[in-house]
Image (cartoon, rainbow, N blue to C red; front, top):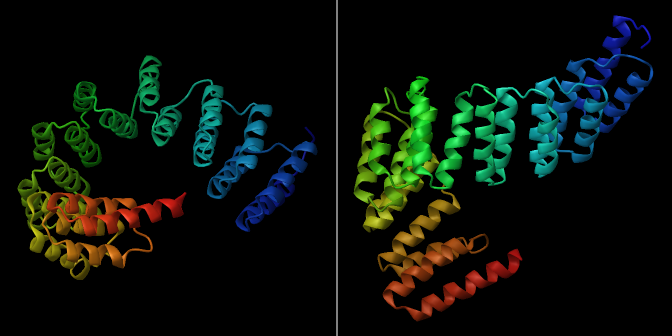
Length: 348
């Protein structure tokens, strides 16, 4: 390596930053190669900056070049660079190369483990995510709060309640059971596994609750058709002064659907938009169509579905079909089926 002044280094680094800021990532990478050829040592800061911009661009070819440079310059032990590359490859839809980056890190940090576990979660490969967590334990790497969030999600998606309870014990031993984010994930896991009492116990032990913990409880009760209990939770949530969000009202409307509370569901939809300024999504409208159709208000349900005809997914028409089947309305059912078929044809 030839000697260089701090001024020349700063100027080159400044140019790279400007090129990245202007979205000229390839030009920035070309300058990086030129600096390297001139014998100028490339600092980790420059490499890290390029990775940050690459993450925003989701440019797979540049990510591969940066990975090659990382290996060539023996930067594998700098775990933060590996962490970023794992996330970039995942965002580009390339799990295999994300895994190759992970395997190239000689001593993964907890953040590196979290990055690869979250990668498999993102690709819904939950068994592999759990296997990686076990490997992490064997490596004696101490988990952090984020690790538990990912692994709990894997357990909930696979309905592994026993393993989830064991992990809950570990979380309690580490004194993290009162962390509202972890507790909300525990509530969600227990609810998805059908352990409603366990979920309620976790909720009741929380010193304070946020919208996510309330949402997990409401959604869980609604899913298992405990509509009255879900709506009671919503009332308590309001009394505690916790502001609901879009997800809260999805759970509330699902609860109304199971109990058959048409007027109350319509009122909640109005409250959502008028009092809280939340715009209804397709999910909210699907809940309302399902509520109206199941209660026998097929004309009202059809009008709502027709208003969204340009972007209605099959779920809305499925909700219509369920109501038509329940009430034996073949005419409306045929119309719903035809619209569902048209949407599927367009999407394919």
